[in-house]
Amino acid sequence: MLKEGDKAPRGVKVEDADGNAASLKDYAGKIVVLYFYPKDDTPGCTIEARQFQDYSARFKKIGVTVIGVSKDSGTSHQKFAKKYDLSFPLWSDPEHALMDAFGVWQLKKMMGREYMGTVRATFIIDGEGVIVKTFPNVTPKEHGAEVYAALQGMA
Image (tube, rainbow, N blue to C red; front, side, top):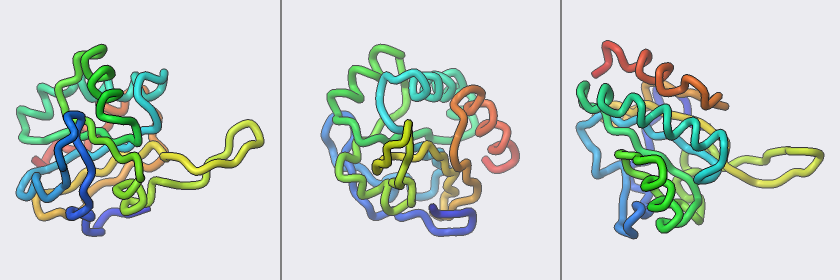
């Protein structure tokens, strides 16, 4: 997993919820909160997304863009965003190219079963593309507040 001080992989292309090409290059010069999550509309992922939505006005006020990434389709992202009135972009990474680049596509274990999946993690990336803060193995509850607190003084 990438760590603080590493350059974010800005050239990796994925799709936004509308099927348009998207990459971190599109956000050069801006602070980005990039968060990876396993699946739309599941309990933990919904809590996390709603946390970011609850803080969205505060993030916007300090010039920070939040972007969520999972391997779900654009259609799934559209339904998820509409259901919970999410105002920030959700990117689709079905081939886990961006997840691999950030090191969040990892071996996971649940109930004795091993499988590859998305590790819930968040990265704060400065305008120069440097990762200035990482949140590995995120706990969804209160994560929006945790990220907002870390941004104080950065933006």
